[in-house]
Each structure stands twice: as structure tokens, then as C-alpha cells.
Length: 276
Image (cartoon, rainbow, N blue to C red; front, side):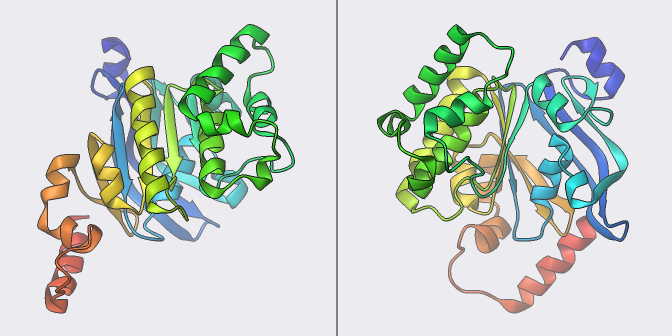
């Protein structure tokens, strides 16, 4: 983002994505996120942490333009991507701008091979040579997909399907890669492998990453910055190393000591609501 664009949108230079005081309502009744503000810097990896129903997935769908099919709408606030207001843009236009969302649950075409899945994600107007370059890049990051490139994707393991979902996103040449629960349902060894590849993609390709995760320990290992969301509010943010050392985060999101003082749990919840 240029300095002029940053000044016009009220964001800091070097910021690829900014959300400012965003509220989202479903069915014109349920307030899902309440004044969420966050930023992702160029080349930065940011984690968005929280429990079930905290508002993490809604935040990603707000950015990618996928609220409407679920009868959700932004009722307040602004989202800017590379200095441009996203409100007038459709989901497909946002992808064209370089913003791609890997949904929770590994949404791949099970009846197609991994290679055909990659081809389906590649822009129609792209050249054959560029397609082959991007496909080979995906196979370099995920060699297991190359080994199984002619197997129907529905027969891949859960970890391989997650690799394919990320690989499909890379075929669009994203500037910002948003990942919703990539560790969901995977064995710890696979989570470690996939997160290591995400970190490699971020470092090698300069792709910014916004990572939604319930596995806070894994996310904080690879993220530069993190936000903690509870009940639709951002209640804590900071450098990932700082959050990892925070005693409240350790107790409630990193396993803690195993000794829970329920009086302090109630106090912590009250305090988080007050901070929000």
C-alpha cells in the first residue's frame, strides 16, 4: 500500500488488510461480531484465536465476501484491502484482487483428481505455461499431492485434502491467504507438517496469512502477531511471543497448569467482557 492510499483509508503504511470497527448481523437479528478491528501487514502472518462461536469464521467471511449466502451483512465499519474498500466488491472480484479464503472443512472436488482440482482453481484467462509453473510450485510444497495426482481427491486422507485445499488457493496467486481451521480433525504430526509448510509459503512467496485457529499453541508458534476474539469482540492482541507468555492465554488456550481456579475463571470472563 502506498503512503497516500494508507493516509486515505486511515491505515498504516505496509498494511495489506485493515478492519475498522466492523459489526456483522445474521438474519437482521443476531449480532455475530461487535466492533472488530484488526490489521495484517505486508508479508505478515497473523493468527485469530478463540473458541467455538467466538466470531472467527464470520470475520474471515466478512473479508472474503461470503456473508450473503448465510444471510449475514455488515452493518457498521469498513474493510480495506491494499487500500481499496471491499464493500462494493463481490467475492470473485476479491479473489481477483489477490484475497483468497480457504474455508473450514476442506472444500475440494472429491470426484476430481488433485491435478484437476488445481486446474479448476486456476483463472480461466491464465496461460498454460503459468498454470504449469503454479502447479509445479504446489507440488514442490506438497510432494504428496504429486504422488497422488491421479487419484480421486475424495480418496485422499484428511491431511492430504487440507494440503490440496491450500494448493488450490495458491493457484490464484494470492496476496493474502486466509485459512479457517487448517488443523481441524488432523493428527498432531500432520498439523505440525502443514503449519511448517504454511510458514515456508509465507517466507518464500511473501504471501500475507490470516490464520483462524482453535489450536492456539500451533498458531502462536508460526504467527508474528495474534488477536484473541471472544463473543464477537477482540479482547487481546499483540506479538505472538507476548501472547504466548500471557498467563491468561496459557491457562485458557494453551492447556495451563491443569489446576483451574473457577473463581478466577469467572473473574477473567468478566474482565474480558469489560475490556471488549
